[in-house]
Amino acid sequence: MRLVFMGTPEFSVPALDGLAQAGHDIAAVYTQPPRPAGRGRRPRPSPVAARAQELGLTVRHPESLRSEEAQQAFAALKAEAAVVVAYGLILPQPVLDAPARGCLNIHASLLPRWRGAAPIHRAIMAGDAESGVCIMQMEAGLDTGPVLMCEATEIGPQETTADLHDRLSIMGAGLIEEVLLSLDYLKATPQPDTGVTYAAKIDKSEARVNWNAPADQVDRLIRGLSPFPGAWCDIGGERVKLLRSCVAGAGDKGAPGQVLRDLIVACGSGAVTITQVQRQGKKPMDSAEFLRGATLPAFLA
Image (cartoon, rainbow, N blue to C red; front, side):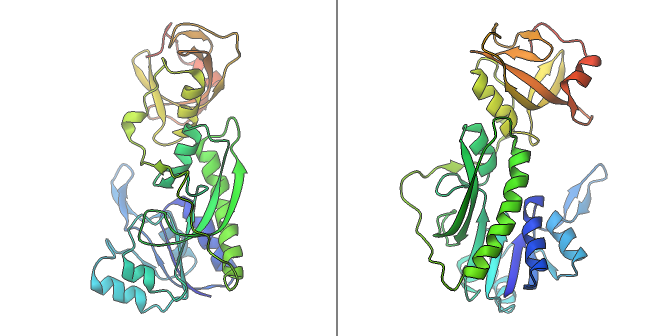
């Protein structure tokens, strides 16, 4: 099938790889423009751009698709379908209408739950039992289009956003190939009006741990914001990211923020065991390594 691929972050790369390996004719790859990164703040191509260049594919990175010129350039590709995976730009109606068989979005949630920007983070932070991937026929609304195919998966009790991100990325790559092979007879199912939730973009103001919250809520915050932006707390005057955790045993109790032993910290109710942290400017380390080089205060702030 002649396709346009539209994606930007690492999450999108397995889908691009899968489509290329399956032999589809990828007319062009659309991705976000290079952004300043690293200490030198030099422009760096997106993960999708870098992979597309390795595959010898044509890469386009317009700042917007709202101009008539950009829309005509897209339509001139005469694609049968566009596959969209975390692209990051709004697709105007002329772009949505250009491919003969529409624009197909790989969305990392079980729609209509968690429409929007941060479905993986929000699913873990909310304590959802499962997540998944939906292939959706795109329309003008925010993730409101009819669904062609879904696959669900359980969220593990100690799974982080990074863990689930990687699993859903691979699942999405497999699912879009199934959809493309079955497109002639698949029927898109409208999303129900009930059960709609929105996954708002993560704000850094959410990231500081509130030890007065219940232990299960603190645990979900830590895992849901790992690795980015990273839940954090103050440990002896140093801002430390908390990357992995689990709810401690029922007998572990104390005042909120109290260090009970090692990195078991009391919460408003119950306690959490911190198993991986990251000091500023350092790589992630497990709690045992951290404790060898740190003196813990009686309370974390």
